[in-house]
Length: 117
Image 1: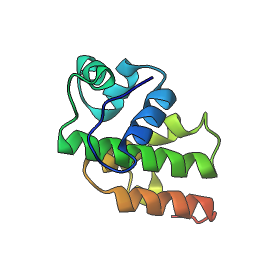
Image 2: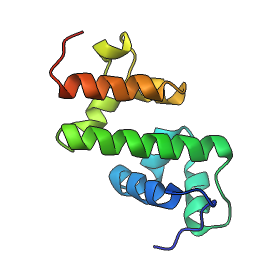
Image 3: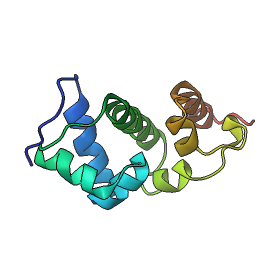
């Protein structure tokens, strides 16, 4: 699949990885909080993501890659939407959307180390 993307290092790879992890554009749109038609336009190269959407794509791609390195791939989607004790009861998805990426990475690290909140 050829994807026309903004000139940001790693963006196209992150987008492809997220699209593959989501399974389809509709689920990716839901993950990112955009309309499915927007994801379709990104895939087709008729539109590029806004800077905010591009940042969200890269943040989500990094978080998913980190999570998949420490937990089973099938658990990651459940983990994204489950209240997390290391995030004071917020879900990782909520935190990422609020720009609290460092906290989510910290939660992954804590879970990987077997820490208890």
